[in-house]
Length: 221
Length: 334
Image 1 (cartoon, rainbow over the protein chains, first blue to last red):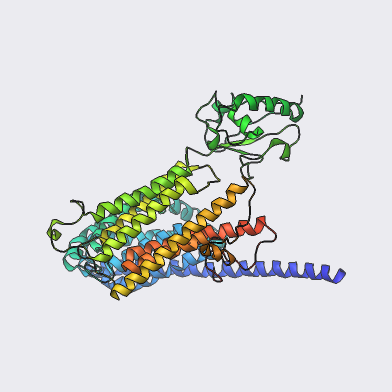
Image 2: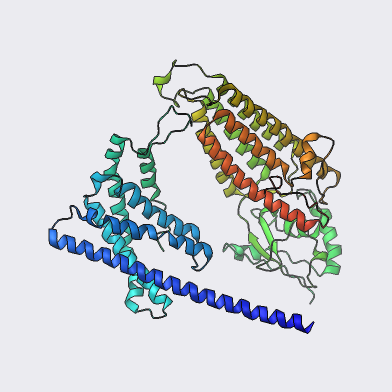
């Protein structure tokens, strides 16, 4: 009886140790992740500024940073995983929707529809995203290190008032500019008749996506 | 003073202030028994005469003062974090002393399950038929007089309509619903989903450019037989469950196979009604070879699995001698 009691307490201690080491590991990983993402978006910001200063125009800017942007924005999918396993206390669905809408913009709009890559609206939302993400990831980093400078906190909770509408405008204008090209090329669409008895029109899908910006709440993250 | 104060603390809306004033103050249990019985006799006519129990009576006393707070909408708890008291709970059996305080919360406008089921099923029935008869504004006029419908399209319409007519008749005559109501929001959510997917399916199946299944008549026949067998099975299970409930009003019993071969699946599954429903939709998918139907089947499968698992778990909790061979929805798998 005594030995089983002892085993019980030893097991408890082991569990506590496991929990502590797990959360230390989780914190370490999250800190690394947030630092890496801050660095990544900083690199993007600097690359964009350099291009504009050197070339004096925004044409071709997207092409020059496309690969970096795709890498870092796609890597943000990991955040959904963080919420799913519980090391970050946010709803999986909210994070999922946010990341998915970003990935949709990057891969299904600007990446696939070449003709709109030189639009001004693209630059607009890129700038907005860069500022937002740098603020967000540095906020998380400093939070994890328990040293939060006031201006980061201020930036996180106040800049979005300006940045969020600008970002929405940029994204909507880009999708709107893409519509005629989508219609003409019939991309990502499937027409009847076919053996699956289904049809899909990417043009109308984009219109629905534009309308869905109206009830968006998860941007207030 | 042994006054049984029924404090109504509204957790959600601010109208509790107005509401708590006319709250009745029942007396202590010993006296309350007598008083309550007396009140039962009086109030009996005004309530939906389900059960003549203290709880019901106390709540219904507020009806003359606040007709908005009908019993189905009220949720009484012993503790803010505890679950709601059920309609059947009796004051004497609850873990309360001479002073009992209940926490009241408003469940919002309620609608009966029967209403929800009927609207959910009538919608797809009518919508599908609208597409089947190709009402003028649905398909482009350029398809007029292009082709006559294939046989499988007629079959699909018959199967779909039979399915929903059967569901409506079951709701009216077979089902015994235990929980009375659900929040009003649900009717919009459920109906929206059912009606939209029915329209989406019907659009493609009845489209002039519909392509019949790849493997032709054998595939259609297979789908049809699976569908019919599962429909009969589903009906048998509903009848069996109804008979189970009719024998004893409120006590729960484990369903067992009867003489009907379709109920023999009870040896393997806790919720065969969902199994048969899934089977019907798989049959329909095979018969029509249509992606929207497959999507609807998939979503239905996920939702019914969630329900079946919940039901299975509650069976296991309720009955100690519950047969261990049974799975929740798919034999041996799920």
